Length: 205
Image 1 (cartoon, rainbow, N blue to C red):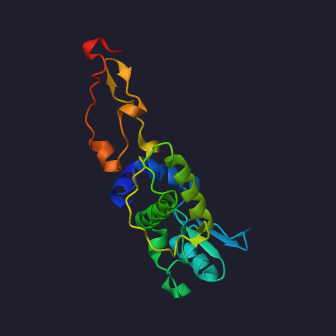
Image 2: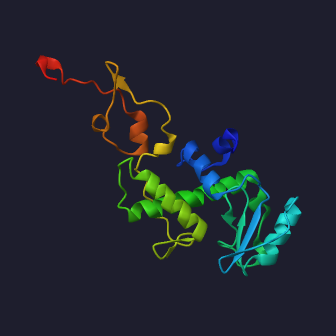
Image 3: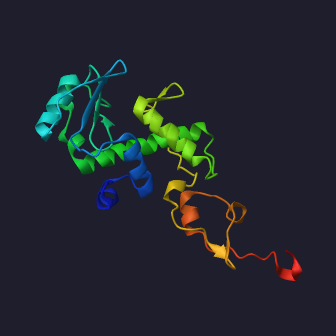
């Protein structure tokens, strides 16, 4: 599992830590020097890099000719790079790779959420997340090249359910139901106070 301190220091703040962990587990690598090369949908076997120099050499060899993914987030190294010489050590630095990768994934997540109509229901978020991971792996979503696409810039309003590990607030020992807490923005959910059940006043059940 990715280090919590690294997430806190380097990851995009718009994504909750649990979502970042889930993203790296689903689409990334445990090895910051990991380089994956694919061409025509087929994986090209490359030597395992044991140093930043070796990782950079592999990237520069294949950049522009194949799809090259690098580091913890398996960031697409060819995005925004015109020449192999433009590739920087940032790609294999754990902090920089996590920063670049999570910032790009957050954009992909916003693109997918916009396609869904920016829903606020927490039940929809897992599907948005899965589609965003698929788009990250393939580079496309509904015919859009997600890495080159413009960022919608719309905050992700669907509650990032995977980060909600604590039990629901309860009133008189009863768990709050979804109708008790209306979903809003992620920030609003975090600031929501306790709801008080008034249904029993006057003998109503």
